[in-house]
Amino acid sequence: MHIHQEVTINAKPQTVFGILLSSDKFTEMTGGRKAEISTEEGGEISMFGGGISGRNVELKAGKRVVQAWRSNDWPAGVYSIIRFELGSDGGKTRVVFDQSGHPDEATEMLSSGWHQMYWDAMNAMLAKT
Image (cartoon, rainbow, N blue to C red):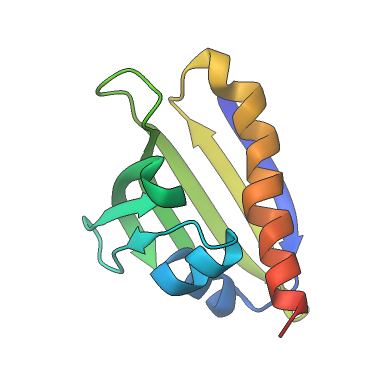
């Protein structure tokens, strides 16, 4: 299965990139659920209090984040690839998001989860600043 979403975030691409790769900002965005996110390609990631783990595959500052990502509820060894493409859109960021390789039965939960836990949460956090 494949998830494709296109959303607008009310901040510049460099800001969105920074939130995706900042342990502190990501933790704040998710309401205090601990995140440990490496800022290096190949570095480990852990988010949502350890419920999600993986590695950074490719990082292009202000433009792209690609991660091998898995829910700890999935069978051992199952990882999906998530890709955030960030583009400037008049002072905002157009995010083109794709996720593939996840278990079929997780598609509906993941699809709604990206909106709730990433896009809506990020815009809400940015509205406070």
